[in-house]
Length: 270
Image (cartoon, rainbow, N blue to C red; front, side, top):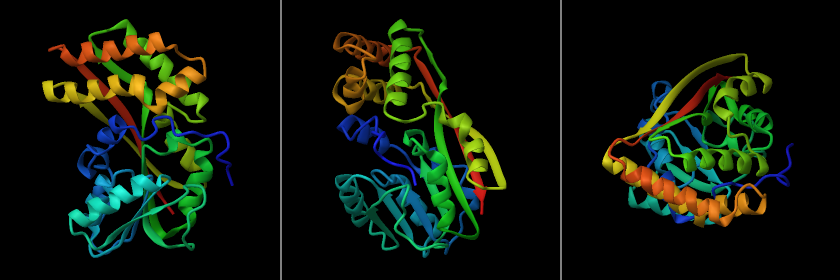
């Protein structure tokens, strides 16, 4: 089983990060999975974060049960509160470990993980663990961004630096920022024979989208754990990160601003 000793969640749980995660829904982040869901299925959502996707999954498979796990006690507590606010009785959240799921073999029909494998030092080991808790005929659904397929306009030099710093810091934290292109390979290595791949894109271009995305990253660049990892690892100075934050604010205010993130997706059958 993989060790966590060389891993660190790059983004941390700064408010700007959680605000970004809370924007995610099944529709904008798991559309490739929705056709495979039906009422009565039991679902495990690994790395469930604030729980917005998890709650959508719970609505789609009700009366099936949905369990979301996350490494952060505080994030789990917040997601539990959100479930209560939405009066969803078929969902619960627990603290958990992607490498050592606290469930018996063959416990779930679906294991879902969104933007998780890119942060793990041994994603294949995690996929094998996901496979262990699947029932016969069940599916693992994973989706991760590929930072090598990130495109934006206007071409601001400091955003080129942002990407360089991000990739270096992600590798330093034990992750793989080019995870999207590797998902199919990882799933095959984990022992899945039936693997279907796809891709989808987040695009931020409207005034509201640019403000939300750009200002979120401006805050992350100087205030989140990402900034600390970048500085501690020698990937950027405080001054360089301030320039990156300024570039994000400039991009957010540009009427012609456009930004896309391409994601790899996999449906792997047990």
